Length: 245
Image 1 (cartoon, rainbow, N blue to C red):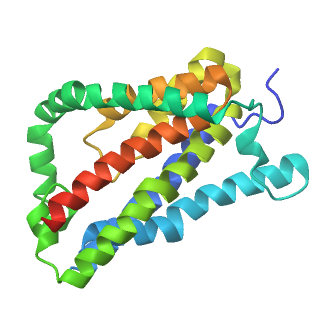
Image 2 (image 1 turned 60 degrees about the horizontal axis):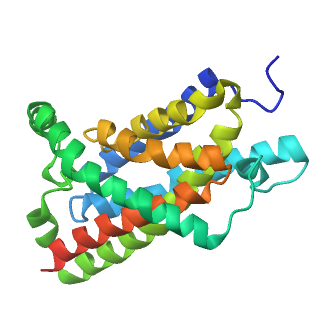
Image 3 (image 1 turned 30 degrees about the vertical axis):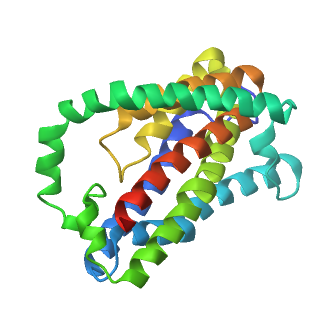
């Protein structure tokens, strides 16, 4: 019998994709209506005002339901303590594996989806192509600096920490009836949830599945969280360097 604390896969999928669907729709609308701001800055602001608070709300509400008070206890269900040294050691190995995938899987996926990507971007304003560095460079210097600062904070810390508590903590623990398949299922949902970046799903699955599996086996979400932060730190710094040069 399914535990009363289990959410269920159908509810999980509905919950995740309704939230990200609303968020992505808002992002597309507001990003189109405010061409005076970089869309990536709008994305971060909306993410901080809607997407991540929605995820925290669901976790806090579930904790209230399960334990009688608002907390993040539902994201830490079944977790076991690991040493900081061990977490960082494994996280750096996982970061290295992600780097290998960035030179192998990602170029293949980019090549496979090139035509689809080009056709889709024809229907969107230029700013929704985050790889268009010249577009971001066209804004005033103060807006560029603000964008870099906000993006760094959001993409390196706020986003990964929230997503790991939500996906690898809360959703994994509350879909645990699938046992060894749980990290696979949650990783696929996590990848597809990125509606605003639909061209890297295969790459994301390859990168995050080893992280999710290690965190699941060792019962500690911080393996995945630190790895996630390291990956985003590298990509964010690379992005900022390209903009300010």
